[in-house]
Image (tube, rainbow, N blue to C red; front, side, top):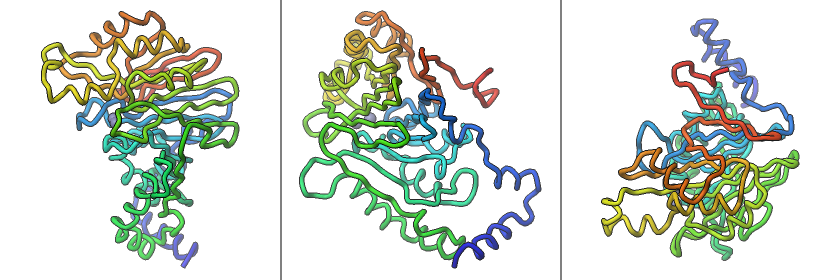
Length: 341
Ligand SMILES: [Zn+2]
Ligand SMILES: [Zn+2]
């Protein structure tokens, strides 16, 4: 069953498709697909929202490219769509996925990423299992990513069975390789890219929950995950070039609602985030996972400014940072469908 029948299937699939379209399907879409290993780190905010299913901000997901690798941190709603906008396959374009914790807004896009990734086409093409890293509680019970891998495999067994039989998709491509880890420390070290996980405080009942720091030579980016103001994060982010932090902001009126208090207690206010930025002193601070209830981005910025006067960006979907000697920022143009030159 193998390559020959797979090629035959592809020929059938491509028959009747106009040549130019077939070229796009067959060819690599992406100069962007694998970044040149320049020593820089390129960070793209794929989704900067929280659980709200809005159009402006997709669910939390951050792409970090360094050393020729593309690593995805969280897989919120729409991550696969944003990758495709960039010309990056959710299959062969992603080398590993790291989850910060198991709230739905951080994993809702994972089934899509996994299953679209093993399909044939410029959006798929993964030949190997999807590597999935996530924190466990340190007990002998299966960790979160182990449960997700098992559950998704069972839930979507019909799709993997059909595509293996019908489209000759390799069985290996449909697997999820789960890597649970516990405690602070290095969880990934390949091609000069080191990923360190560290516990953050997202509330007593929301454990495990981690942030990640990614180092590549002298460059680094730190991603907070979901957290309150956290000393462990401040410690691990020390000396980082780019600090991407979550933020939760409400209007004074909404802050009076008792239903919102427990949610606010799990997150970081703009003023608290400003305090974190002032203590870490990154070259650039940026907000992502922006949950703004009754307030706008300007208000978030001015509230953060009350405790922090350094460089700050309010993240938008597809905002891109290049970490070299300095950290530069590019904003995606929806009209041009690319980053303006
Ligand atoms: Zn969240
Ligand atoms: Zn959360």
